[in-house]
Image 1: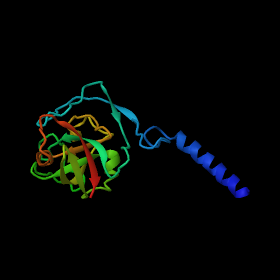
Image 2 (image 1 turned 120 degrees about the vertical axis):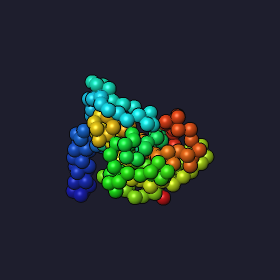
Image 3 (image 1 turned 90 degrees about the vertical axis):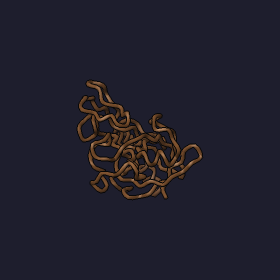
Image 4 (image 1 turned 180 degrees about the vertical axis):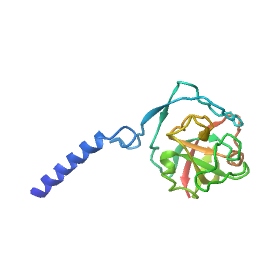
Length: 188
């Protein structure tokens, strides 16, 4: 009897602690990832080779420290990004501290999915419109920071982004002028 009471007390304590955490850190509803804060926008020299959204002074942009759960077919939004030096991708890729040709099939994942570099070098399968392609994770699509030179004066990424090179878009047969497409992805 004492054991059941101890378990119930511990469970109640755990729920109280978890419910006190800031939004975006934990939610009792599985799959919910809320903004953990807002970044004040600051405009600057935003390189526009792939028609990125550029920060506006004073606008507030949501920040996410989490992403939806990864499943066998994780829903996401594919965005277009160049990983070449001097293009809209900003600095070198976080995983290997190098730039990558637009001909390489590489991606950056939203902060929660990137998981503190845990997916660096992993190949993921991206599917859209009946086509699939494998791409290597080389960078983080930062969902917390942005509106600075390192991030090409672009706002933080949403929490469900797979930011892909032109080679990935071409392999999927997608029109790059659309700039955002609903996809699914999975780990190899």
